[in-house]
Amino acid sequence: MKHIIENEYLKAEISELGATLTKFIDKKSGTDIVLGFESDEDYLKYSGCNIGASIGRNANRIGNACFELNGKKYQLSVNNNMNQLHGGGVNGFAYKMWKTEKADENEVVLSYFSKDGEEGFPGNLNAEVSYRLDGRNLIFSFRGESDEDTIFNMTNHSYFNLGDEDIMEESLYISSDRYAPVDEYSLTLDEVRDTEDTPYDFSRFTKLKDNLSQLKDGIDNNYVWEDMEDKLMASLRNEKLQLNVWSDLPDMHLYTSQHLGGQEGKYGKTYYPFLALCLECQYFPNGINYKDHYLLPILKKGEPMSHYIRYELLNTEE
Image (cartoon, rainbow, N blue to C red):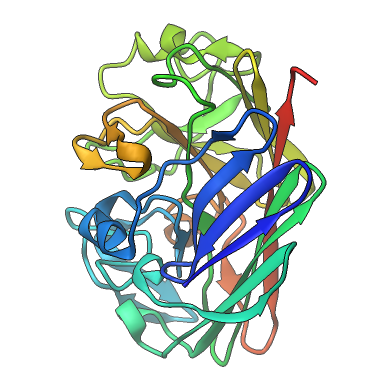
């Protein structure tokens, strides 16, 4: 089932499959700024893309698909070389049918119960996500509660394009000047570098083509804030629209969709590399294995955790 929420500025469509954002439309221009598919079958067919999905239990990669918590080692399912990516295989949150708890013209709330041991994670977890409209904001929030200590690090995995042929002419700003390098398998390393004088520098609005032309394989890297404050993390703009991304999560992963290729998307469009980008607000990837340095996405037994990502979509022609 799909739900539609809308106000005078925005319209969004949310699917119960993966608690997925399937459409996000600026009503004045009629521009749908997220990639997506026409049917649930296509979302499952192209499952590796995670397009628009609510990612869980853990966003991004966990090295060697294992971690230690409270002195116990947990072996997770492997689905990305020797690592686990986005909660595991075709059984992560992105491929589950979520239950609708609330649906009105401004908000959709969905829930999913993740059993102890699912994909290797400990604890029976009650997860809930909400998509809510407030003026020119679409607010994605998530909440979790578990009967054991566990990992809980969700994000939204929408691919954004402001209505252009690709993202090369769009300009990006990221409010952090620190990023983390990755290994040959795109696993984030236990290292933070300065973006200055590198192609990873978006500390002022920069056309994506200017930086991506310097990189053979695009960007698939985490940007670091390491605080839990409300903050503007990124802005993407072209001549008509500007998307501002706000969150209380400590980091954000930038992925420039270089691995897209041949997927048949909605509106009859074929998806190809660098068509869109993902701005995945989250905890530091593999941070659970880097305990001495980063805020950790540990959900304590009986203590609910919640975070949000706020997508502010402005029509600059108004």
